[in-house]
Image (cartoon, rainbow, N blue to C red; front, side, top):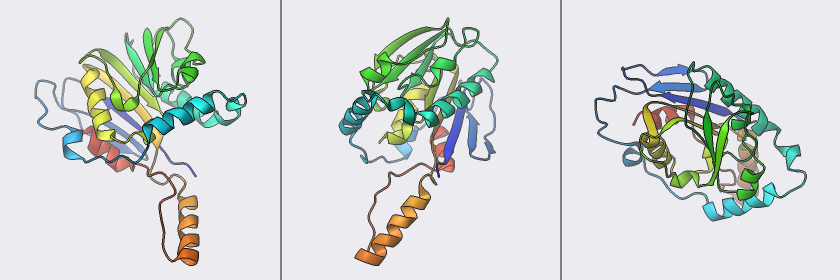
Length: 235
């Protein structure tokens, strides 16, 4: 079973509270007039769990498969749900970014009356070449790793990400860079697999190894719990 965590971050000019609803985390930070004394990357430690070069090769290999469309139904569904959250914000975003865009699963649903321009970022050039964008929406495609986001400070109105951040080693640092590039009233909406994803498979492997080998080892990628996302966004 896949547990999906949706997290939003809206940066208004007044202090707001953190709202927790089911697996969704919506958080708003304090007044932009008060400088932040600490960042998520300075509070939380990170470790290299994933080989990013290997992940790039895997994505490029999968992007070149002729039957790729048979396996993208989850990304299509979650991409639409993520875009639907953007439509809930009643404003026009002049400069948006989709991180880990792959084939534009979020951007393909954008409308000109909601997003004027979107920049699609992914580590796979083949995915970007096949990415779709909503009619009438200006777009740009850039090969960029989610761990090395490079946008000017206070230059982006909207950042969206759908099912790509679970492979990031330095998630606190990634969030710091996202918040830095966002304008004071910018919006960050993301979706990633939650902590209980593939828990049945994880438990089965642990039981089998304990019985046969007398110990357990990691076979499933670690996933972030929803409450940890809230801590990272508000660090």
